[in-house]
Image (cartoon, rainbow, N blue to C red):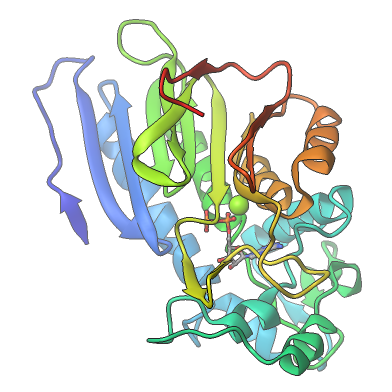
Length: 323
Ligand code: ADP
Ligand code: MG
């Protein structure tokens, strides 16, 4: 669905081409500059659409659904994009000690965010049962034969915490193929600033206040960099005074508790995306320690009390009313 009609403001080489569509369960917006901007944006949306179809866990026909149905029944063929995104996923999972885990599928399904009218947390016994099926170390990925195997029946992949980042990386590569040297690509909480913004200044990415949707915490200037924010305020329900949100701690089977939001900067959008989710799970101390070991990464984190934490090299302009 086209949300905003394309704004083609003339044929001058520096005029922007901008378009937004609903994809991957969020709003994807691309603003690009240059003579071939329109072609580039259309090609990037085609790629987003293709990846969305490939990895939509709710579409029985998607490749991800097919792989999940084969759990416990041996290796199945996977497309090159799926093999690549899984390779990165398993790498991030290993680096984060499983805080990010692409086999989180059974728990995501059990919690069912957004599906129930009056959501309640699942029964503890059900959480324990599904949690036992979550373990990235069991995934058998064979790039040589192009197959993936989920060895236990009931295991399920969920790429919700990395798919948008992967797609943004693909969109960025497509921009460059079309000679677009300036673009802003936004997919929900994942943003990539390619080159400079108009006026030869960095792109400016605002970070939302996790408890006040009309306020921002500050601004991150970016150039050739991805910024991804994961938070407890987009998809959640409240029951008996507790907020249950969609980032799950694979160890407990319950939504992560230690953070309100985590924003990660990284040259690769898929790494930024997956790391931001992991940081939500890890909490401030372990998240800061982790991000400092990842070359090119920086972190801004809001802990459960609303306190800000950041790595020393984070480019950051704090809003005057920011907390
Ligand atoms: P958003 O989708 O808002 O950008 P995230 O990138 O943090 O937020 O992704 C959250 C989604 O990732 C969840 O909806 C679920 O599909 C999946 N997920 C939840 N917890 C984890 C986890 N610990 N590791 C990997 N994926 C997760
Ligand atoms: Mg993420």
